[in-house]
Length: 131
Length: 131
DNA sequence: CAAAATGATACCCATATGGTATCATTGTGT
DNA sequence: ACACAATGATACCATATGGGTATCATTTTG
Ligand code: FES
Ligand code: FES
Image 1 (cartoon, rainbow over the protein chains, first blue to last red):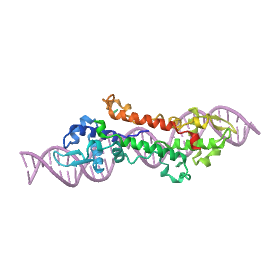
Image 2 (image 1 turned 90 degrees about the vertical axis):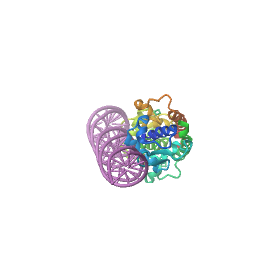
Image 3 (image 1 turned 90 degrees about the horizontal axis):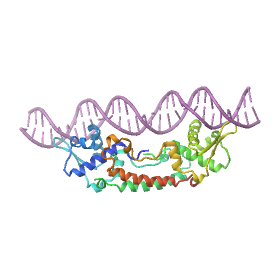
Image 4 (image 1 turned 45 degrees about the horizontal axis):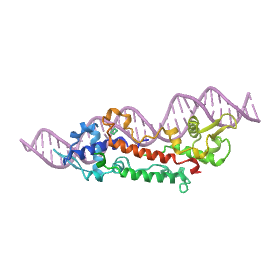
């Protein structure tokens, strides 16, 4: 079981790099060595983060990406939501056909509790913490 | 992201059923309706739990499976370990090539903390709780 | 010996994941 | 005006994983 997929892992490294760099704008080309990710893949990843509002982007020569918020305002949860969808520990809610006892299911309740606490944990990890 | 795969989900239902039934031995055939799982699949799942020492099995006519421990001594963690491998939130440790800064990686440390707490949560959920 | 059950494998299909390639668009500098 | 350097948007591909089926061997009961 993986909490973070590769996209998120790479994104963390890239954003930490950006937070450290302290330059207004960083191109993918200039981070790829430090981050150690294939360039086109990293680009696609950062584009998603741009769509999610976590990054600014500027096209054209001299362009690149920049953090859209301060590092302490970008959490692991943000990245995960943007890159791998919302946190859902149990998918039983998705298959109601299989699950007649959805309302009374004790397992579901336990998992919801666990999920809530996990969520607050990942909301507590910021890019700032990782710099 | 899924905490539980289908195997574990099904296994929980089956074991809860067995704990409720309070009979010494239950065949797959006699649980499949209540559990709502394709028979051959459920069989394979329970075989794995047998290999993991969580169930007893008796072959031959009149045979079947039985809980090898009291319901309060079977945790969600046991099932997950047996059916989907040990809990590992981050797979970065597996790819050391990509990860030069393994020792100092702050993300890894944060995830280890989260993973430990998550582990104790799933160790706290027993079949007894779900009956 | 037949029937009913598990043990052990091998296989299969659909989907998800990780990654690449391509072309369009936008901005900079000469 | 033009070349170039960057992102935007898609389409594509290869492999791994997950979920499930099929088959045959083995054991036990009656
Ligand atoms: S079995 Fe579906 S919610 Fe529990
Ligand atoms: S980047 Fe590999 S352990 Fe953190």
